[in-house]
Image (cartoon, rainbow, N blue to C red; front, top):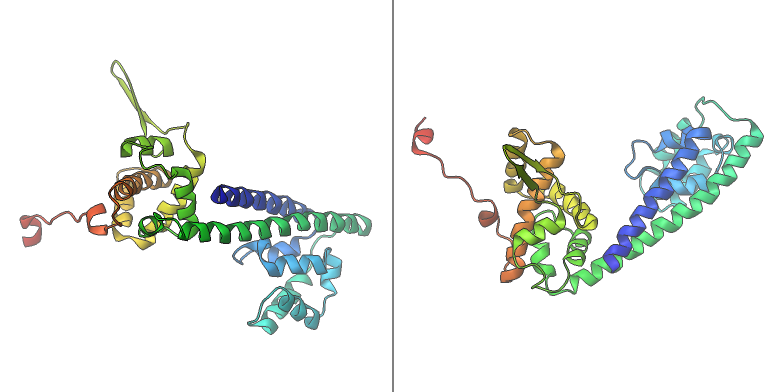
Length: 280
């Protein structure tokens, strides 16, 4: 329940962010430029605090270096305040096209209303993430799920929440893979045979699976080799990710059924080198 609520909060945050970003494109491009290269963009506390202090580009251009330092401190930043304030001041005072004053002021009021929605969405997502992680750590299967490469507490909570607590829910890994949408559908009629992606699936589990598989690429040499092998066979990035998720999901079903933790050497055994290849 907490994992689903947190995912809903993340989606709400994305919607609020996109609405605010769309509005800023129309009258306040300087703020977008200022945080375009920063992770999180407008969702960063510095960006939201700056917008609250200066909701229009005219007000932002009048901010002094001292005021920008104070805004950064209010947002919780503690390092490189002087350099960041100087950078922001340069960006905010650059030349941009402006809306008429009355239109700009009206858009500023609208931006503050959307900012309030984004602030609430960010707070909700953070609080629910902490609650979901805490509940996940207390679950008896948490140690098994967390032993897999690329599994963090939040992703693990989402996976566990969608799988459920009933160990007999899926009699085999094939049923779980079909439920998650990672296993393809094969259709054959006469001489025609097609392999397609499943459209009917647990969308939440599939979304968490893509995040899990992507994170596993840097955490597991075996997962990376499996992904590269699928790519070399002609799979697209998404198809290779889905195939990797399918492999990991089968391993997870086995580990949960047997009560064992993930073992890289079993999940992705190294192919023995042929004698003639070694001699060459």
